[in-house]
Length: 463
Image 1 (cartoon, rainbow, N blue to C red):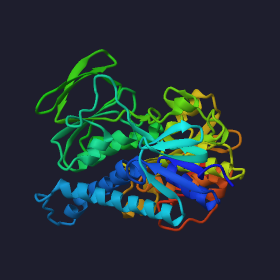
Image 2 (image 1 turned 180 degrees about the vertical axis):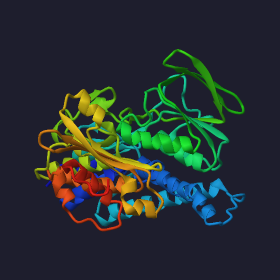
Image 3 (image 1 turned 30 degrees about the horizontal axis):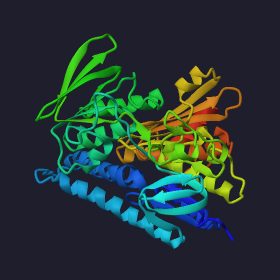
Image 4 (image 1 turned 120 degrees about the vertical axis):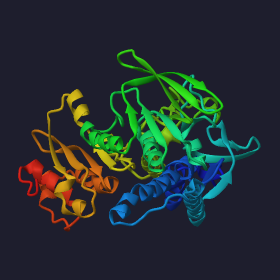
């Protein structure tokens, strides 16, 4: 008989935690999961899902120009943003309940409350009840990062969660940080008629994405009237009863004031590793992140950590996969010990979208990799013209000698869906010729992937 109540206790029911718990149960482990808020964590309740609901509704508003081009009058005078907000919350609530159902279906014990380590095998919930586990998995996620001088007040200076809580639109908005979160909110707010200025310290918006793909986004955003200030640092903030004034400084040392009703600070996320007793049980951390080895095992043999609390890309799908690897190892299986970083897809959901993985051209140059590129414009795929979404391209980074796919970058309609064909090719160690010679249905946007692969072989038909 086991000395522990559970084979596995999971702390946190976000996309890392709940997927881990369900997979563990499937593998025959008696499992419990502890969550202090709602099932699904930040991603489902205050991130990925509600933000995509907003983006979908923003697309509808943004595309009213299509109706106008048909001679249809569009009257937006009755527009009520509170209804947009309500729809996003309904999506989150529906999926959160779905997660709770899946946990129950898989016989995972769901425990509401805050879990804190009391020993390597014991977690105290809400300061009173304790449960024990042979193994414990930390999946407590992250929170919006604050920076000194620009702390959230949740009224004028907002986090991403505050943005998702708004029931009325500001007249104007400054966004500090041009990563995926900042740019998605820039698209949404602009589509709903808010005047948007984006301030980014680095020289490029979406700094992790390929420069050629980003250029397409910049052009679209400029056309829509979004102001983007790159290579610009925020140095001071003043608040008033009516709004904020941000002092910014360019690389040349020149300063300017940018005023708006609200400021969104979107400069990354911080791991939730404080206050859960990691130091009590001797789990090593570094810069706030839990240090893990193979199979996401911490410095304590029976404790594992995944997702935003470890120093890997802070993405929901990364957390889920890390959790699967950890619990499969706990169950005695032999998964790959870690995720291959070159096989992690990235997705940015503004319009146009970006889907990518692997090396960018800049990263390849910086690493001294001998590479070549092949690309194909969306406008060369008949469907993109037929549906009036011809803005975009497919770009593949290839090893010069072997033609191995080192990375791929798609910008355009449905890019976040289409990227997976190239990712599968990379994972399966296929070459561009394998994609180039595979029949693709016509007309589809995926034909642009086929043509980019043909371009890599020197025989694109529609270029």
